[in-house]
Structure formats: structure tokens, C-alpha cells
Amino acid sequence: MRTIHLTLVRLTTMAGLLLLGATACSSSSPAVPVDPGPVALRRLTAEQLNHSVRDVLGAHITVPSRLDPDDRRSGLFAVGASFASVTPSGLEKYEAAAAAVAEQALDPSHRDELVRCQPVEMDASDDACARTFIEQVGRRLFRRSLSQAEADARVEIANEAASTLRDFYAGLELGLMSLLVSPEFLFRVELAESDPARPSTMRLTSVSMASRLSYLLWDSTPDDELLAAGENGELATDRGLTAQVERMLISANLETGIRAIFSDLYDFKQFEDGLVRKDSALFPVYTQAMVEEAAEQTLRTIVAHIAADRDYRELFTTRETFMTRRLGVAYRLPVATAVGWEPYVFSEESGRAGLLSHISFNALHSHPGRSSATLRGKFVREVLLCQDVPTPPADIDFSIVEETQGELRTARERLERHVASPACSGCHTLTDPIGLALESFDAIGMFRDEENGAPIDTSGELDGVEYEDARGMGQALRDHPELGPCLVRTVFRYAVGRDPDPGEEALLESIAERFANSGYRVTELLRAIVLSDGFRRTSGPRDAEQSGEAS
Image 1: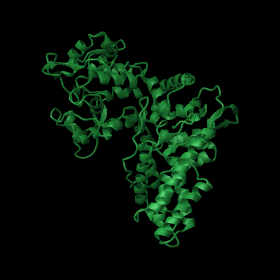
Image 2: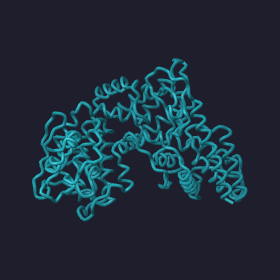
Image 3: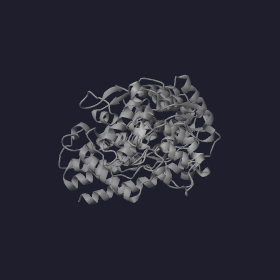
Image 4: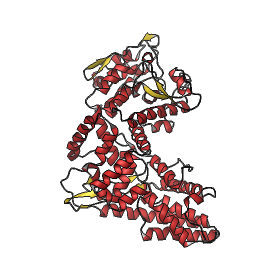
């Protein structure tokens, strides 16, 4: 019998998908000559979905991981989310996940914490109690109050299932499932309206601002206070928006948002997905558990640094970090704490300072059996400095670089021979002087002085600034004039889910100046972005959506 009710859930979901597409298109208005760019539907990333479910339905819930994969574009899942859709097979995965989540949320040991009413009879439907639950939970999941029709449809599903199955909570599970597979939950719907004070421009609605704020700063659905502010129109005013931003920036939830931003920027999902593999014969210390702790070490270092309102640039020179005993083995360092984390400061003799000396970074940007100065340098250029590195020609011969046991014993020697070809020199001139400074860290980030018995030369230069080793390179990066502006551009892209439009370049320059004047404090950068017209205003729906293409 439950199959019949699952069919009702699916029909409700498919109808929602059609209506959602129509809503996005109907919100279109003629383009106006304003600086802000367009908006688009954004599918929740797996991490955002997980955070939202746990925040609304309970921290005990485990969300199944078999969902449609996130789409990474322009170096960010946050940008790819505005192009991601739900495939037919993906809908089945979301349905299976919704069933598992609903069962956990409404199991006998947790249902009383979530359902704020008691059914008259446990083995029958109860319209009033079902409606209370659907409207309460649906408001948080949809990031807005449900319409009468939306609530009625879910209550009908819950009541019919409860009557048929003779179990009120079984019916409620089906009603909850229909919310969890709805496009209004799976997608972040950002709607625009004409600004009464500036009729020629469009702004995000106050309710849409609640979601945009919450997923940027907290990586989750808005809480009740933020939703209330959105529904009351407060987020369309300078005063109301500022009040909520200040509250959110001092909340403990900001840590989750910071972790999400930098995990996306550094592409640490590769560790979570088990995609960073190494030759176990060459690197027996390397395990999945160890490398996951290495990623956590870097994120903890970033969060602690930003929470202390320190200069963002000093993340590339600081010797302060955190350590576990398992990581201590890989770093060859003593760790007193047997279980868990402890603060740690790398010594001067360790040869380590800054994030680029962490195991996470060096393992991620290496090959299974060898380090890669080119991959590491490419990351610095493209991700940290927002510079373009040309794509190598398809017919390049990499055999010299890959032969680690030949006459050319060090990576520097092999790369120098490789770049003797004019077709190779353009890219490698940009990347290798950076990456070679990190050759003291092998393919899993363990320290070494030699490669194949030959001493490693870690000297190099970054845009005219010379250095002798990884610490010197970190200092050169810290002082690079493009480091701060690049983070501004990246966080803005993360916040709005797209690349900046040409009309937003002046805004980014202004925010970069404010960021610098604040002492490169990331909290001030976030404040500047969310209070800017680039975050609050829009030119309307993206062209692809106006033409009816899938988001």
C-alpha cells in the first residue's frame, strides 16, 4: 500500500518541478542598466542538504550519501549549483534519501521532539496535527511559509496514508517525504522584485535574502528569527539587513559557513570521496583516515585564524595549527594527546609554515607516486591569485617528468629538461618556480631533504620576489598584491553562485579596498559583500532560464 502513497509523493514533486520552472521564468523583467548580474535556481549541494536536514529535523539524522553528484564549475561547487538539475535517476535517489530521513526523524525515540502536537488516535489520521507539523517543518525546509495549496497537498498525502496504513506517524512520514523531494526544498529559489525606492532597478525579495544570507554565512537553511525577518520585509531594508548580518556573524554557526567556503575553494571534497589515492608500497603511512584528518587540520586552522579576526594573508605564514597523534606520525612530530585534537605550533626547524606546508594541500596536488611542482604551482596561480594558466597542448610528452628513477634524479632536473620545449615553457614558467619551493614535501606531504639521493633545491621566485624555501614562498605569497583581491572575487562568486559580470568589477575593487583597510579580516569581507548591491540586487533571471533551458 505504501507504494501507492509514494506515487502520490512523486506526482506532487513533478508538478512542483514544472511550477518552479514557470515561476523562475515568470519573474523575468526587462534588463536594466545596473551593476548587479542575474540570479538562477541553485540546487542544494550535498553538504547544504545535509546541514539543512539536520538543523530542521534533528542532529541524529544520517543523510544517505548516494545522491546526484554536485557540479563543479569555475572552480566552485557553489557556481556549479546554479547549473545542476535533477535527473530521473537522481529523483529516485532523492526519494530513497527522503524515505530514510523521514523514518529517522519520526522514529519513536525522536518524534516527540519534532512533532509539536499529539494525534487524537495513533492508528488514524488527524488533520489538525498533520497540518501543524507540515506547516512548521515545511516553513524551515522551503525557507518560507507554505501556501495553502502546498500545505493541503501534503496534509492530504499524510491523512490518506495514515488511514490506509492505520498509523498516524507512518502517514506523517509520507507527508514529510513529499516536502524533502520537492524542488522548493532541493533548489534555492531566489526571486526579484522592483525596488520601490529605485523603480528602475530590481532587488531580491526579503524572503529570498534570508536564504541567500543563510547559505553563505551558515551553509544551511535560515533559522526562525532570520525567516521571520525575511517574511516581515526587514531584509529589504538597510537597518533590518544589517541587524541580521551582525547577529549571524557572531553566531557559532558562522564556523560551518567558513568551513564550507574554504572546503569548496580548496576542493577538499576529493578527500571525502576517496579520490586522492597514493601508492601504498611507496607511502605506507598514507590512509584514508589520515588524509581526512589532514583536511580537517587545515580547515580547523583556517576557522581558528578567521574566528580570531586575524589577517587572512597570514594563513600562508603562520606556524600555528592543530594536530592528532595519527597526523603526528606523518609529520614526524610528537603529539601528547592520545585521542582528539590539540593546538600545535610548527618549530622553526620543521621547515613548515602556512597552509601550503600542510599534508592536505601537498597530497591533494600530487600524483599517486610522486609530487607535482606543476600542480601545486597551478593551484597557487589559479585559486589563490586568480591568474590564468594556459591549458597544455594535447600532444605533450610527459615521459621525462614521469620517469623518477632515471638519470634525472630530482623534479627540478626533470622539469628543466621538459620545459626546454617551447610548447611547454609558457605554462611551466608560471607554475614551477612556485611548486619547486614545495618539493621538500613528497607526494603525501612528508618532509624530505633529498630525492633519489640528490639534494633538493627549493629556491625560486614569485613574480619577481625570490625565496630559498617553502617558508619564503609563503611569505612572498602573503605579500602578493593579488592575494586579497582574489579572495574577494572568489567569495563573491561563492555568494552569488556565478562569475562576476563586467558591471560588477568596480564593486569588487571597492570591496577589495575595504578588505585591505580592515587588515584583511574575512568577517569584514563577508560583511562588505552581503551589504553590497551586488549581493542584494539583480538584473533578473539568467538568460538560459529566460529561454526555458534547464538550470
